[in-house]
Length: 87
Image 1 (tube, rainbow, N blue to C red):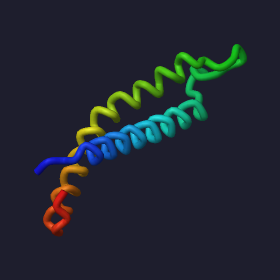
Image 2 (image 1 turned 180 degrees about the horizontal axis):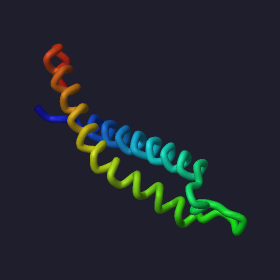
Image 3 (image 1 turned 180 degrees about the vertical axis):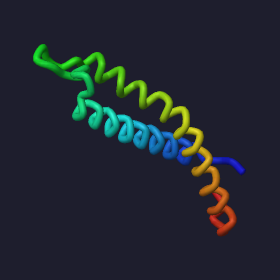
């Protein structure tokens, strides 16, 4: 069973978008909670810490979500072939 190139691209882009949305959501909640005034204080916004927080969520999510998205795409391609849509 082979995946078409467009299936691979679609699943990987979907995985990246999901990882970005989750990482941005968690980072936004962290910035809103602002534990210990690490994200912003009277001195201003600590953008370096915000970016580091986003990356610390995004990288592990990407490592989990991309293979999962590829597996889901492969299963969907299998399902299509069982239904008679030979690609």
